[in-house]
Amino acid sequence: DMNRNTAGDIVNEFEMVLFRDKDGEEGLKCSRILKTARMEVKLQKEIIVEVVLNKSKVAQQTLQDLYGLTGVTSLPQVFICQRFIGGYRELKIYNDQGLVEMQLRVLARKIGAPHPAVSFSKEKKEEK
Image (spheres, rainbow, N blue to C red):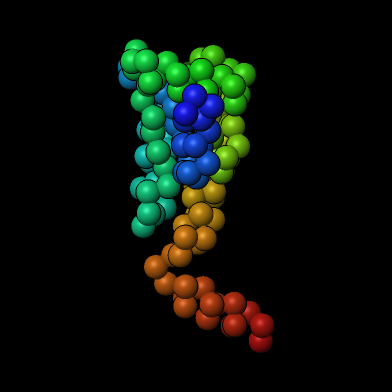
């Protein structure tokens, strides 16, 4: 289907998406930020996806799709919860403010953290 926006489908499917080229320094730095945050927040489910775009036709089409979504031609491009954050500089600022980790924690709770009972009993105590 010619009207499908592959980049859009990926962005809608996952909570954190990084589009990068294979060897781009900034893309690799973005990748490290997201990996580190993911290790801090022990996620059960894969909610971060990295799309590495090469020179293939499919990749070039995906780049076109991305441009349609963001109006930006360069990589890397980062989306968090379907919102376009920007590239490395923006992600770094976002991360330095603790927002990447915070967002992951929220998502981890949403998809069902391992022990929902623990947080439940804490709330009960505070009422007294």
